[in-house]
Every structure is written in structure tokens, then in C-alpha cells.
Amino acid sequence: MLGIDCPKPCKGRWPTPPFDPRFPKQNQTRNCYQNFLDYHPCVKRMNRRGKSTQPCEYYFRVFHAPCPMSWVQRWTEIKDGTFAGKI
Figure 1 (tube, rainbow, N blue to C red):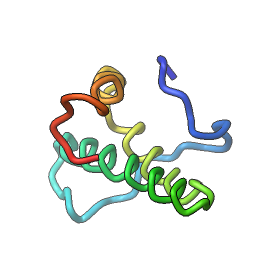
Figure 2: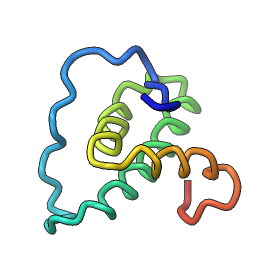
Figure 3: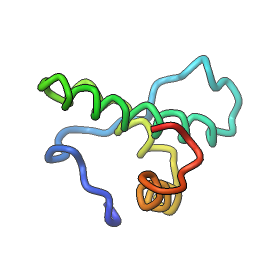
């Protein structure tokens, strides 16, 4: 996936993400960004608790479906440095 690895081996179908009422408009930029922000704290929380990160896979799939890969790559590169969101 262009330098972005699945948290686990990617299996099954990756359908279009379901409708999210927080983002009713056609422009899905905020949806991409928010699901990227939701994914990383979810993984950190689950790892801290010693639980499986499988529930976080939903966010991973949702932000990878509509987001351009160039955005995801850039956000991943800078998320530990000067990233604009709280992760």
C-alpha cells in the first residue's frame, strides 16, 4: 500500500466506508483527517492495556479508503514531530 503497512495482514474485502453523520457533505477531507486522528490514539490505548488492536482496524480502513495516499504518507511521517493534530 505505497509504504503504509496494515497493522495485520490485510484480509477480506475493503468496502466503502459507511456514512458518518459527522461529515454529511461530499468533501471528505475532514473525515480522512479525523479518522487518522482516531486510529493512532486507539492503537496506543489498546497497546497500553495489553489488548488486541483489532477494534482500531475500523479507523485504519476508514481513513485509508477515501484519503489520498500522499496525505496518509505525509501525516505518518510527521505524526511524531510537528503534526497539527493531537495524537
